[in-house]
Structure formats: structure tokens, C-alpha cells
Image (cartoon, rainbow, N blue to C red):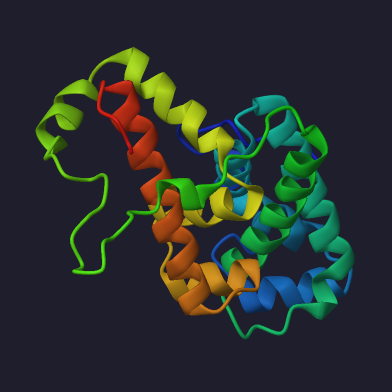
Length: 217
């Protein structure tokens, strides 16, 4: 398979004239199941860049993302017969990508995971906040995000998230998938997706608050 993940320019003539380039994905998958490499190449061109981008968001390393993307399409070719069409092919590929990336993230073990509960708002018995957030710093955040240093802090905070929490955040905030599609991709219920996304966002908010000089506690 040729490397096409990073390509974002105009389509080449070979792409336009590829057999079955405009065929529905169900037909192309059925053809892949029979060993049709032309159908596989068409799906590779159609979804390859998306899979690479998803892996890159999760891993933050282009070389690793490309390896994962290649592995995903090898797995797709081998497991095409197991695709039931109950969800979009893109969702199925996201699931394969997320699983592969999460495995790599777990193997890294370079950073100690942060307990996200430390960033959950603490409430008194009367329902008022015990600690943060008690100040409105959204305007500061909006202004500060224009700075490269804070962008770097955001990236570092995302890297501290547990693999599954990071996958949920990436699929929601970068890939803009619905909660249901995220659940399908990661094997979670919609309430579980919402809970993990909420905790991840609270954690990022706390990290950015510290970066702006506000205390999260």
C-alpha cells in the first residue's frame, strides 16, 4: 500500500479514474471480501487520510500514526467479512484506529496518569462550589489561547488523559462525531461517553486555569 495519509492536495488522475471510485461503500466492502484489490484501494484513498488524522490526534506522533493507519487497513482487509454494515464504515475504522492507538498509548507508560476526579468541582451541602470554579476566566482563556505557550500546555494536558478519555475527547472535539457514533467506535454507552467527555473537559479546564495563573482548588 502506498502512503497517502498526509496528502491533502488535489486528487491525482489515478484517483479520479480508479475503478469503483464513486461506488457505495457497501458494494466496495463486498468486493473487498472477494479479494478485489481495486475496491480496497478505492476505500483506502477514501478513508486513509481520515484514519491517519484520527491516529495522529490520539498519538501526537506522525510516524506512529502512519504505522497505526497502515495496521488498520491491513486489519480491515483481513476482517472485511465481519463488517455487518450496522454502522458507517468510517465508524468501524475509527474503532480499529482507537483500539490500536490506545494499545500504543498504554505501552508508552511515559507519563503518570492524573486522577481526573481531582478536577471535578467540589460542592458544599448547600450546592455551592467549595473550591473552583468561582471566578470567570473565560475571557482570559480566549485571549490566552492565541499564545503558542498555552497551545502547548493544552497539548500536554491532552497527553495526560487516560487513553480512553483521550479517545473520547478527540472523537468529539477534533473529529466532531456524535456521542452515539463515539460509543459505537469505542464500545461505550452514550451516558458513558458523556461522562468521560465531561471529566476530560473538566480536567483540561483545570490544567488551563493553572497555566493562566488561576488555582484549580
